[in-house]
Length: 186
Image (tube, rainbow, N blue to C red; front, side):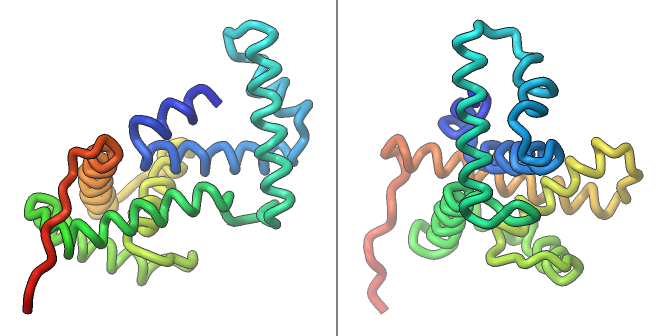
């Protein structure tokens, strides 16, 4: 909960990946708040009041996941909304804002995104989601100790670089520091 709140303020891409991990932890623990308490919450060095607050946070996640019908797969609606926010900014940076630095990074990443979308059997709705799914899959493979090819590592590095730039632009937008270009006349 504390990590999620901090990441949501500072790095939206990391927040999304973190929330996907939380969803998987909830599924792994079979939506059982007592298991989650024993395995996760009780390990925190926190006051009983803070642990109660964290438990409530997990209970809300469990409730929302079940209510939204994502017990087996899928992501929380509020997390998907955040992905859409990043994707809308991504599209604006490529068109309206005319962010040349971002566009250069995108061009370096585009082939990897296209290849990833073609290789995956997951439903990918946009390029930002593709990068996030790739990054999350990479983290899962690393946690499992699986061998990761050089080509995959390079693709993931390009996803990471693009998401870092996108998150930076998102933070600037939130602070009012990102300026949109005036309308172009054709």
